[in-house]
Length: 193
Image 1 (cartoon, one colour):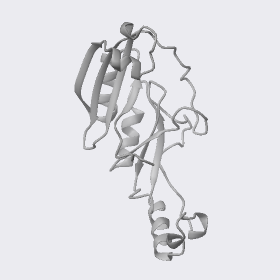
Image 2 (cartoon, rainbow, N blue to C red; image 1 turned 90 degrees about the vertical axis):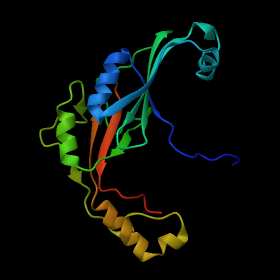
Image 3 (tube, rainbow, N blue to C red; image 1 turned 90 degrees about the horizontal axis):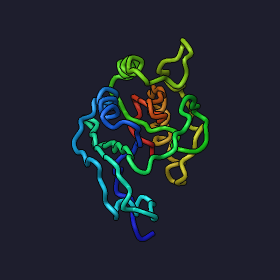
Image 4 (cartoon, rainbow, N blue to C red; image 1 turned 60 degrees about the vertical axis):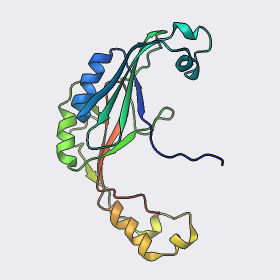
């Protein structure tokens, strides 16, 4: 491969009302709005986004928000022209195919994060079951996973380290008002290379 991925650029969300969406993500993630491009009409932008016919008619307002204490940016876009089609976001399940499954953000206090999300309007947990909460992943054994690299696979210290990491993970899923599924996770220190 002649190129390499060097990092995450941003997470894009297309919204119907930008000011409302900015306020929503400020509350949801303690994000801070850092830039806005009101009624951005740019032919190069429009063509890169795939609007090859009448790119001069594309009108979009774009705002970037930074999630505090991270290097993660959310790019919110409200298209004034052309207007996109709406998807039914009333139901989403963890095993649905297509789109992004979920976006995971690490948190330092999973219980506080859970109660915060439960109290954000227009945000729902992945299930409304009364017993849903952040659960700890059950302990696993080295036999339950494999490293692709043979040397790591044969290193019992590395295998045990992954078991220890997985045994500390607690997480939960929620769906924001735009139908994006997020995960808040605590305890996952690495993937285990």
